[in-house]
Image (cartoon, rainbow, N blue to C red):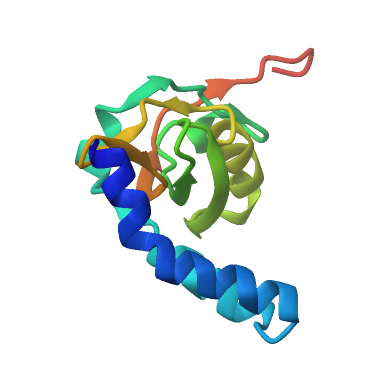
Length: 137
């Protein structure tokens, strides 16, 4: 029953969004802003307990550099637990793409709010890397 209440609660905002899109009067930036209003922020500590599958990034450069490297990412997680969007917040530019690529493969348990799954954003720090062993290493 709470799922129905959640939908009813958001109907005015959703109706405004739909009408704005159909009439062409809602700029895309406003749509993105409105969608963020439907997203909640989950602390990195809580989100770390929701991870079902974590893929380690592969170090694209000398393994010694990755040993102590940390990459901070902002993640948007869908209602179903897939990673919808990754933004690199802080990283060595040589490691950013590998970290983002690995994070896109992560899977999370849905975050429940009043009995219904919601999209959420969180931060994650990657400190553990897989060393790519090649013929020159």
